[in-house]
Length: 230
Image 1 (cartoon, one colour):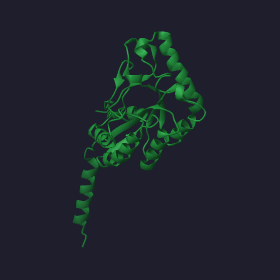
Image 2 (cartoon, helix red, strand yellow):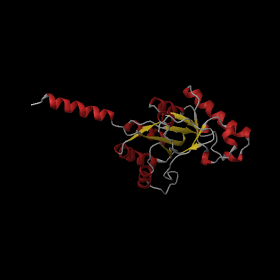
Image 3 (cartoon, helix red, strand yellow):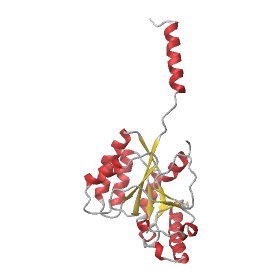
Image 4 (cartoon, one colour):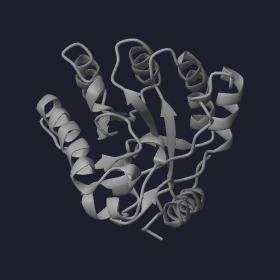
């Protein structure tokens, strides 16, 4: 029999639980370099749709054409975002100011034509930078945690384990969806459920900054976004 005393105990217990400090959400952001294409990237989008997670795609301007633009639009429809990965994927530290700005503007312009939005984030090819580039490029620089998935001899299992091992709250993953990089697609298909079981929530890079209330520093290249709520 439920008595008034029991009801009071249930009410007090519920109140204590509601007032208890909550663990911060463990956010992760997946990101992929070197698209767009209609081969490996299409399979990557299939995996993201299967697991209902978004990502950020850093695209190369010279890879954008009428056909490959379809996957940029598809990514947007799936809740993903598009970032700038330069026009030619060259070593930008060896370029002068005009050349760097031309690479960025050309690619941002192509992205805007397709999406209607200017990109907010830039990943330097080969993570090759020099200090002046932070003044020349008005985008937030993004690096990320990888699993050597650009190396053909690193197999699916090693990539999967690397993705899982590199997980931490606020982390950005630097992965690749270039043509033929199927091992990363397969590795991520297996790693995402594991990370979800560990309590991680997948967001875009923009959502990562927003959710953690972190204002980007124009002279920092981010691999992990600090939690500004603390």
